[in-house]
Amino acid sequence: MKIKIIGNLISVFILGNLISIFILSIFWTVTPTLGDSSGGQPRVIEIIADKDNTFKVPGQSKAFITLKPGEKIVLRITSYFGGEKARDNSVHSLVVKKLRDQGWDMRLKEGTADFPLVAPSTPGEYFAECTVKCGRGHDEMNMKIIVKN
Ligand SMILES: [Cu+2]
Image (cartoon, rainbow, N blue to C red; front, side, top):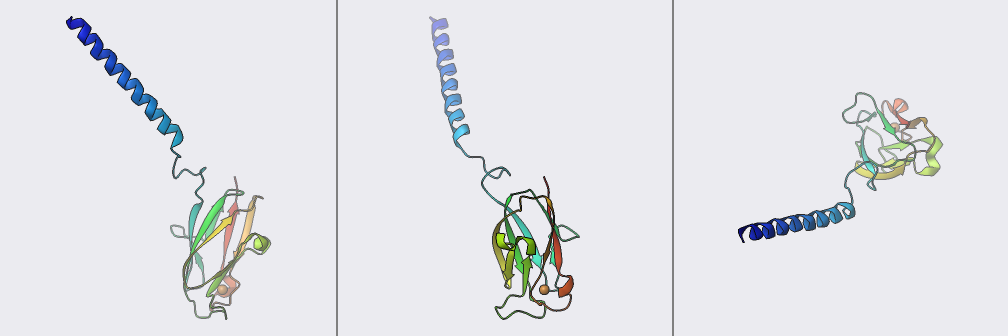
């Protein structure tokens, strides 16, 4: 009798575990994985168009960004007035002349703005420059966009 009760308890225990494993496995496959690089969320990359009329990338000593070909990104650009601004109130711009028709032509107003973009599909180094006469140092206001696998 005692053995039978213990046997029943064990089978209830095993059955309960099997059911919870089954339920967990459903959640596991249905729940989308958040924050992985291959998922749907584009990578956010911060750039500063600074008041000394240079581009800066936080955490780096040189201004460049590295992208995968065709990668979806968001450029989060914070811009500061560097002495002169354009008639449309742009204090800087970030332009890749070769990629202008793909949206790589951003007029930058003071403050922070997000620009959703797609990296070019062809690997290589792309030259990005400011085309707004922003003040002293404007002619050297540029940065590199590196596209590689
Ligand atoms: Cu400029």
